[in-house]
Length: 80
Image (cartoon, rainbow, N blue to C red):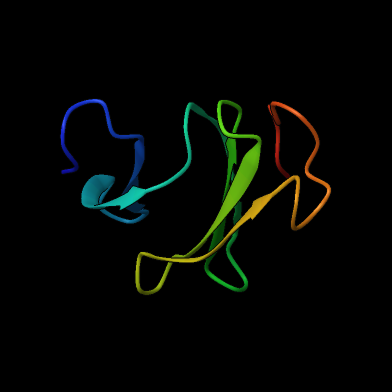
């Protein structure tokens, strides 16, 4: 797990419902969306005005989009 105070979301194995990894994301993660067809996870980070895109197969960050790279808006509260 990341150090205290570091934002992260747990990557859970859907069949076992257990935490298999912690993936570092932006500040104040608020909402999570999953595309099961591509094993891609999207996390709305309301504190850093960003969306983290995670490869669910490897539990690694693909990209963190921000208001300067993609128009995610200020304080995103939903993905889907």
